[in-house]
Image 1 (tube, rainbow, N blue to C red):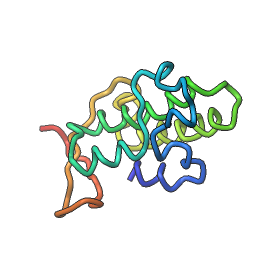
Image 2 (cartoon, rainbow, N blue to C red; image 1 turned 45 degrees about the vertical axis):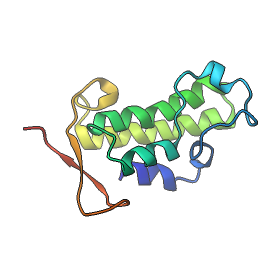
Image 3 (cartoon, rainbow, N blue to C red; image 1 turned 60 degrees about the horizontal axis):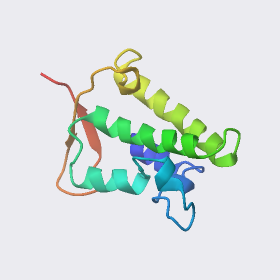
Image 4 (cartoon, one colour; image 1 turned 30 degrees about the vertical axis):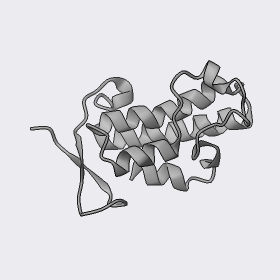
Length: 127
């Protein structure tokens, strides 16, 4: 749900694909751990996330990278900040304020209901 919410947002376009050297020649010098929504999608499809906290770390990394590389007040910086606020709201809704991964809290394991890619991820409580 969180992934789809961000992906569908009108300001998500710059975050969908990895930044190329053509777009920003020094990007990979400044940003040590690049991440894009397409990278998150690949990891979701391969069930590479151990839990929802790992997923949220990557989602937040996308926005943090954009805010690190782009100048404060620029359009991309502002869009990343707006999407970061949506992520935080989703974290609080899913985990509660103290349990949200961005706050260092613990999250449950992600499970895929159904049989194939595109099946929504659901939260499963740790036992």
